[in-house]
Image 1: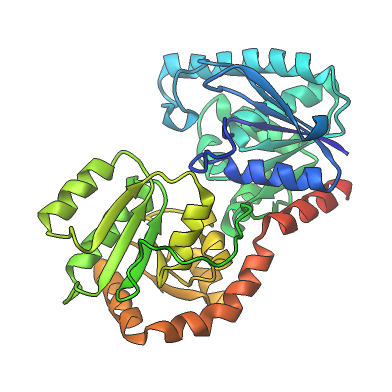
Image 2: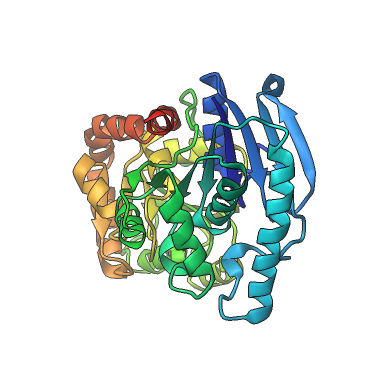
Length: 382
């Protein structure tokens, strides 16, 4: 089968692990292993280039350099100039994609994110009659359908899609509500497995915890930092913060003001997934203190590293952690409760990790890129 993916998030380099499209890049490789041919169309890219690999079975087109001059996530829907920029993105991208796909006999198209990809897939269906799916990978479907013009386009795109997918259980319900059509839950996942290795930077005498994610308010790294203040003794605890973002400088300043130099390390962005794996594998727990989230990739990556989690009760995380019994949850932004859970896990020591181990393996298998690839093909064939 020849598949086309339309997306606005895709790593320029395969080692760029912080890009939101890394799960798609890993999925594409898995589909190629299953002998499918894949065309990836990356709109609003920072560069213009064509990449051919895997004996010609993967072609990636980075197009539309500088269309918006900013990320779609930062567009203000009520700013007329920015809306004009989005419209221009649609027009230019549609022309370029039609030109490209006329060279390839594509069987099916998958739009990753509803905007702009879903709208572009709908336009392609009108012009080239290529059936398509929209895979909601965030709340953009629910948010942008409330806005004039763009909202009506998204609804048309959803109603004309042959298949609707969402990478969250609650999100799939929201897509169903907006579209009036069935939406299948299909988790996004990364390829993430390595031989067991010890991280020399991790102190075996301490309880090691890891935060992995964007250093942004929505991901809640500040909540974890504040929880550390409530822990009576920090002599035998260490937290590694992996990731970059807007609030990172402020977090570093705050940690220094609190005297946390010996119990925290701000590692920054890590692109080597083997290094990420080592941090997760050697942690007592991965802490996910998000203010808003669905099923973050770090949840499945922690399971693949056989490390239990402490998560906030937002999105699907709470129900999944409880269903599979892979860790603890706390009410979102409840610093005291998070601190008490950390203290509890420190007391329990290695017993918890051993207790959760079998459940983590079950979760890892179900939320795996190979499982997602198989499910996607089966759904398309239906």
